[in-house]
Image 1 (cartoon, chains in turn yellow, orange):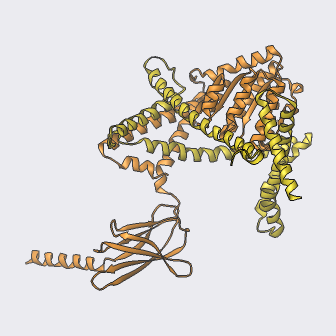
Image 2: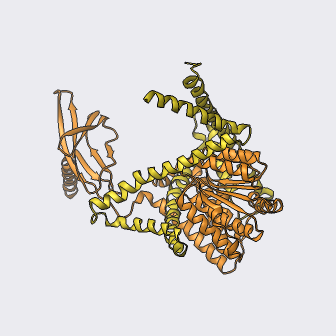
Image 3: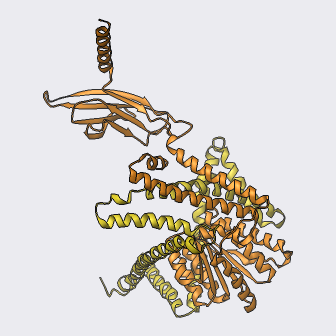
Length: 212
Length: 366
């Protein structure tokens, strides 16, 4: 029985792989079927996963085992219930409170987090002595780092019309950005090719046994 | 005679001080979160060994090596806890070792002085934002330079209206705790208002329930603002799946079947960015994208007509609404950028001169 199930699973994987690949030609019933099964299954999977990995251990189990000790958990529980009030049209307005709390706290936490990780780290990492490199290439690299960072930041300065001399650092900044995008693009395309190789390996090795 | 007595007295005092100096002592690191202790020693030996007592009193070696510099910082400790340490100095002549023990308690302070630069920068930028918002409220007009990606929004909506096809808005795959999703929803508000004015269908597939609820509120509000509450259709803003690629597969299906005339991908995107933008490109839709995910921007740049790069996504709300309060806030952000440039230049100059304290002041906050 277990052998039958594993063979069935293998053939289903093959069927869905080809169904998804068929989208490369055009939209067709096989792709629609695969897409809708994928969307439906993943939605159901996440619902079950979130219930068992978050709601149950973090809320229900704690409240049942030690209600007094975990009474503070009633706050998120009530906020969650308020979100569910969207089901009833007359009580939809209640969901605005948890949304407001979520957005407010997210903005506050993000401000502190990004100021530390992006702003201060970047500032101190760019404060270097450009002449301190042991080789010429390191010195050039140091200068590029400083110029690229300053011009990149200046590109996002919106309060001044960028024309004449003030457009120069902005243009240098966008050049640095585009060069880094090009490098990033090439790097990620290589990673995607490895995903394709993984899929082809599955078809040729696990299914057809053509390669070892 | 008095001078001689004074010299002898001072010499004796110095000798006493030297004699009373401890060989090994442990101190709490001042002005910190109470998670570190410094171990200090005085020895002429070349190498030393440091041990720490665990909860059962068993000694565990934490350092073996050179005695220079005569300081060791033990971090990742628990605040308000007593820790005992032992210094072992091997004696080559006697093949024996000298043992010194010391202990100290970690203390948490209210203000972490190593993060002072962090506080100062936040205060200065926040103060600038408040100042500019206030002056904008009092009627001061602020200039914002043209942002191509945002100017295209009107063109995209116009095209969708002419063709009688819908507009697709994807708020990214981040939840509501992602600042990019929040920025995306503020753009959605403007877009929904325009689509309500032109009676153009707006489709918003969402990945998370919180984003779904917020998006529905935003769109509903926009329809109310233009006086068309009856035109608002809740079913056009819907949940697809929490799964990253399940969500993407669903959107691809919508793009192929509904054939939207304009696609907007604004928010937080990861590996799915190219799949989305490429499918949208194949349908011939006019595409506007925007994200602060540096690794995904290249894919949007190559496959979309307009791309909002990083900070442009956050400036979009002020740019589109021209609301004085938001313009003032944007002006405050620009002040922050100028401050960053000035600090970097100052830091580079001080590093060249050899004044490392300036960089150290900012490094301490990390």
